[in-house]
Figure (cartoon, one colour):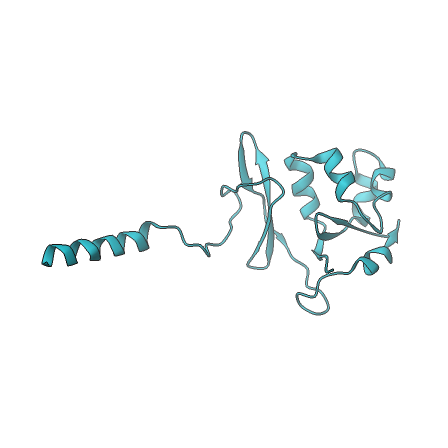
Amino acid sequence: MKRIISALGMTLVLSIVIAPSSSAAVKAGDACKKVGQTSVAGGFKYTCVKKGSKMVWGKGVAVKATAAAGAGYTLAKVKDNASVTSCWSVINGNVYDLTKWISSHPGGESAILSLCGTDGSAAFASQHAGKSKPESRLAGYLLGPLVK
């Protein structure tokens, strides 16, 4: 009986020490499962990117707070920012301020200007699907989630 209790105790201790925590914080460079997947931890948003033959969490980007914490952004607000001086776009359920990226985009200004005030998910995916550099660069312009 003593052996059984001892064995059960050891099993419990090992399961706590060895088993990964389901609430473990995401860290840049850790393995992830799907390119484009995002996670917010500790005030930073991480995006899963492909690096070589591996998928890893990219460098975290500070998440900007909205006026009402966690409220997100509406499509109406995105449509109000549809110009060269304020260019917001929805990409994969998140809102991005692309204003500063317009003049720097390697594909030309018109590629970004066409996304201003719209849901640019399809256009972004058609040009950049599965590529880590555009995904990680996009994360730097994150405003927050789109609310329905």
